[in-house]
Length: 350
Length: 278
Ligand SMILES: Nc1ncnc2c1ncn2[C@@H]1O[C@H](COP(=O)(O)OP(=O)(O)OP(=O)(O)O)[C@@H](O)[C@H]1O
Ligand SMILES: [Mg+2]
Image (cartoon, each protein chain N blue to C red):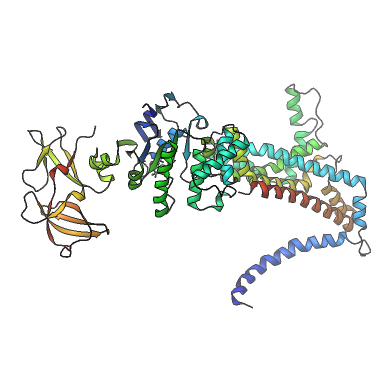
């Protein structure tokens, strides 16, 4: 299937500051893509560029093969859910939602009909006569959603749409949004800086940093095979271990475990990632183990994080399911084991 | 008395006393005078004198025509000007210069500025001279002593109020509403009429009310630019108080002006409430 949106070599500078560098991204029909990255990495700028509110200095935007770069925002076949919702305060909910179809030339009746339909989809069919200020944050969020889908765009852009909601409502809206997206068959580009949100909702996650795309992939891919040190550290907890590549092309890890070598991805030295859940407590005496001292124990309920320091001063985190065993305390000596196959070696960034 | 109430009441006392002494008392004096005759007997005779006379109706009509036109012209000039200042000026220093140019005349005497316009609008004034030299007209326009002349002077004096009121509303507008409108398919024109104008309507209304009330009660500008040919209510009132010394009749004229003005402002306020409440 051809891509719905092709972002080709898009760059954007604000004065001396580069907000987007050479962004290449393809978004498929009906795909749910999450843009994930730390604050200031350019997520909003990329979204504004797609919507037409910001003009790239170079690069092209193709939608269904057509160059939408020259089109003003009001001619682009896509809609946006704004972070602060941006509902029109002087219009009722019904009028807010009918605004899109009205501007697209629908008759008052037809626009009203379609607005009611969209409001029904988000479960607000009874509140059409209210004004936005008379609604809760969650309800306003739904109105913004209804207003953005009423024109049935092929692509919906959402800029941190759930960030103003409390945790519980947020979890519920995540699922609702996902279902709505599948039901309508609209492609979503969803900005968030919450990795859990990105992982529960998206088909593909785009990890951004400092105006660049670091990695694009499914939740599993970016978690188990991060493409860069940044991604490994940004997504979940990670133990990073340096390695050197020897003359035989084997990666030799800087871990106090004898004879641990792995096939290196390329010729240069790099870092390996070991997720905390792959480090486990073992009985002393097993081969291939690390000896360490417990520095800190953090109990989260469903699991426990053990912060340890190995005998040669390397700090690692291990995650064990459930509550910590009674005999473990700060200062305890432990032995840790892991399956070398779980180590992911990050090659030189391209 | 409840102890918790004493403090706030004490704090209110001073402004309340000020309001009574300087606003309500003079108004009461004027109203009482208007309801009595020279012998200090109660009567409505003053109002009959005012309203039964066709001449007064004409003056009222001229007064309100000038005030309405001043408001309208100020609005039509003020909105684009406010737009330019808040939206188009990128360079902050230039915006500051513009605002200063707008506000500084408000600190100079009205009389000085109106005399200035007398010079500019005269038969051989700068305006006529320029138009003649430019070949746009072949006979000098008569502006001094016409309603047009008064209108020009009034708009000049009152325009800043309109620009500041609208500019304030425009600059407080949340930019995301315009983006949302464009995103939903509205070209700039539609966005202006469906989103920006309704959202700045409270500013427009307050600018109009300010300009209108100042225009309807203006004395200096119409008096100087009328050339003695045109009378507005404030000039009649001034005459009664300053040269005829008929405080009863002058009071009645003032109350008539006040009531007409309040009715107009009430209307405008109502439009603002039903349409611009946001
Ligand atoms: N109009 C602008 N002028 C100058 N710099 C800008 C402008 N817009 C954005 N920037 C800069 O570009 C960078 C990226 O901004 P952007 O809003 O895209 O970040 P973001 O990834 O959305 O961050 P957040 O998660 O905080 O919303 C920031 O460093 C910001 O300061
Ligand atoms: Mg952002």
